[in-house]
Image 1: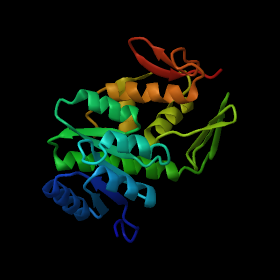
Image 2 (image 1 turned 45 degrees about the horizontal axis):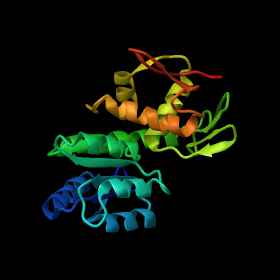
Image 3 (image 1 turned 180 degrees about the horizontal axis):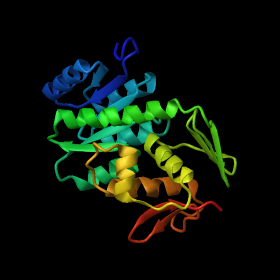
Length: 235
């Protein structure tokens, strides 16, 4: 229990290093989280599809099924926030992880305080969005955005978005024609604690376009202001 009696958030931590896994579980439980663990890709996938987690911390270098494949398979049925752990300098895996639907990444070795900050920022944003009650449905041209159910439809077609994709789209739609720099999007969507690579934004924008645009290479909704950033244009 945490926050004066609220149920603690349930987190799955996946890593094949027993000592690291034990340490992460202990440290996160000290902050009041309900932590479960898995040591390989098969176990991780089975637990994710059979449980309701608020967040998953997923190492990419796993036996049985690697973390990238787990992330890809999970995204077929679940939008649970995922933070991936990658080896230092493994830039291709970071990008692929984001392409497959991860919300954030950390490079090993990492500071546990930074991981906690990422987890807190993601969970806080999810909780804030769940509490939005002033406007439950936002209509913007071809888009209908249900802020309570966190559902999006384009021309009547429901689109499955990850937590970060939803947050990006909602921010851009609520600020139509306003251009956001990559740095502003990192700060607003990922939280001020996030010291990430601006490529994270580019990957999420690209994935979002692939889901909502008729032709992602010639977008009609999420446009680029070259040298500045991105904005939403209502048709």
